[in-house]
Length: 117
Image (cartoon, rainbow, N blue to C red):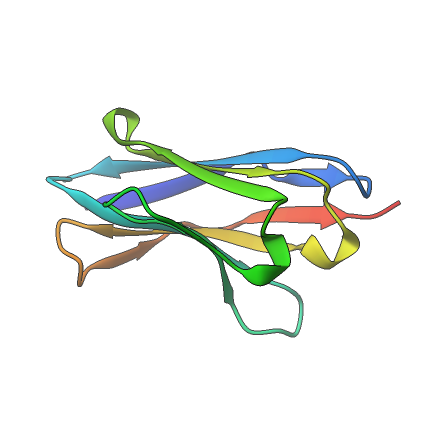
């Protein structure tokens, strides 16, 4: 079985920073794309950032210039550095990874990020 476990969420004031981490474990032969999604209360889950296996980074327009995704393949870990946080970033953040095949999607359990004064 494959598991994704996120950490690093919490509460922060506007303008603050947080760093999310997601570690993959289990029966893993290869990791393709790794990504972060978020879901705010009453809204659909949306892509925040994606780090492809070809080292390409894709960002939602709303986070460009503020968030940075990175991955450490040796540690099977993906990170999301979030700077200049605004209240609209408040959501549950989910790690997503395509593991052992581009067709196999795995999700973490989610970590809450709250931005408020």
